[in-house]
Image: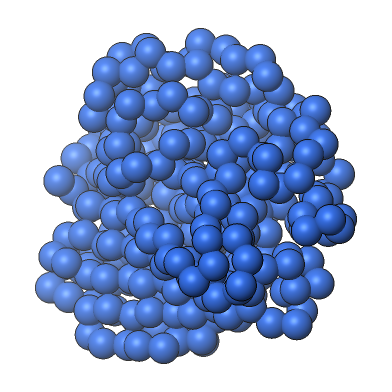
Length: 292
């Protein structure tokens, strides 16, 4: 089922399946800012990554003395959420643990995802609660595919990303297996990254040292833009399919990341993992700002 929120500036659509944001439309002229999930390129538009981000080595991990298996980015993006609150400018979804989730993830949890409209801004809030009687380990991340170019008739390489802080950053290399290498390559220098498909031939750009907490998709040919504001995220990914030609760019703030290629430890020892004691809650979120 799809749900729609609308104010004087924007209209957004969110699905129960995955609690996934499917559309951001500017009402003044009908401009769409989110990729339309065309499976020719990618079947998602803005999936939530939980309880892992990225791939595990051989899709397996160890926890509570046992071995478990999870697909890339976990199960939240393929789960049906319950809509627990819906108003004109706010909607909240919830996914609770079940006997099925315990077979692949040995922790009892509640995940709530809220979408809130404020003028030209879309706010997305996550609340992870540990409802178990033991410490829970997890990752969570965003994977929104922003329409690129935003304006029809422009090209992907007319666009660029603008960072709110001067960057001098190296990306962590992703291997063909989906695991991370320990090798880094200098990638960002300054406050802008010109987009072209060639820079994604080695898959996503993964960073653990960005100083910016705002990244804006801009065009050199028009004034349309969409800014992601994501404060307090230690890891970021930037991605478009490496075959080239896809009409979107993903800007992804993460709490957690894929396994390093040589990782063999327990999930509690995984780099970047979040630790949540029994009964406690973790909150995080990000926003989209249109044409600011």
